[in-house]
Image (cartoon, rainbow, N blue to C red; front, side, top):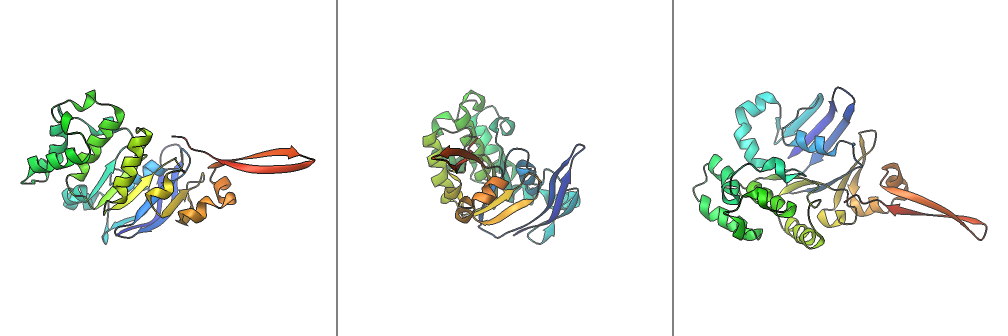
Length: 255
């Protein structure tokens, strides 16, 4: 479904992504991990067609995604590939929650707008807020509104940037269960290694050199102390006991 071929992205200051090659099958759930500044969000934005690589190719369903592609197929692509930003405020702009969820449905000419709004509002437990301004809601509630808005249009690919960052533990557990039951292709970034195995089986780790450090089974990665240290995802503690030096590592979670 998705092929990235030697994707490199450079801004005025630095190389953000360096020679990223990645194949994602239809229905796969990919966990994207890396410390701050490794290019995770940039990679999601390229997959979403919001940014274009400096070099390399992004192939979606056999077609190269570039400016010309979006001119011809932009509406279909925007419906099929959607992104939930880490800060939901950047996604909300309508006067009420109802208008927020219905906006995309109207843009893509769905005939059953009201039914779909009610369905997704109930799914996310936000029915009581349908006539409320989304800007009056908590961070977690805003995120639910934003997610409901993009899922309502029936996408094929869901890109999630730190989806649990604004959620309390109960809401985080609910979201994990919800995502597990979604039959969509997903790429999910997270700093929280403790929940990563619940989001998917395959992990792609971006190193501080902005290249892919590891791509494979998440359980194998989390047991590999050398790789965790190389990714700067753990801190090694050393201490002396009975004349011997002992070491153990601590996994970083930034959420």
